[in-house]
Length: 223
Image (tube, rainbow, N blue to C red):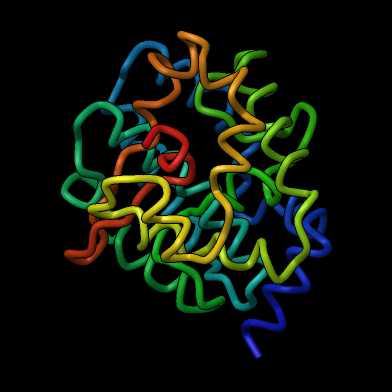
């Protein structure tokens, strides 16, 4: 039943894009400023506030869980980029990710689909930097991924597990049975820029959830 729900949300990704159960839109601009200033205490503060919101009104359905994981993932990635393990600094963040993933049979963190197809467009787009370059990067990924049928896109949820310890893109592609090389090729112009390599890539670090290493949404692009 959960898989059918995921198929629905992949075919109608706007239904997730339009959800903001944690009121993350209120935090997006300050998160960008904190990332620019590498203000880890403030980023941890945002994470604590989002967890409180989750505890006050936990997700009851897969759509809400996906939207929550998307926004929690942006914060967790921001903290990890500063070489800080989110689970060590933010009490219960791993429990939240586990609960959200369980509700819709997804990995215990945000995935490539959260950062792309389930990411709002326009001013509400979730980003780490708020820059035109990151927005263009996400928009291009959305465009590339939207070319694939639902059953193929569903395989991408396995990236978080398949990437851990992988030594080559071909190895990961084989593991999840998806032609990741096609995405990398389509993104080549973006990937060659210093912004993507030096500024954005550090946000895509592995996160440890309950003793389990999980790769970040776009880490496969840098293998």
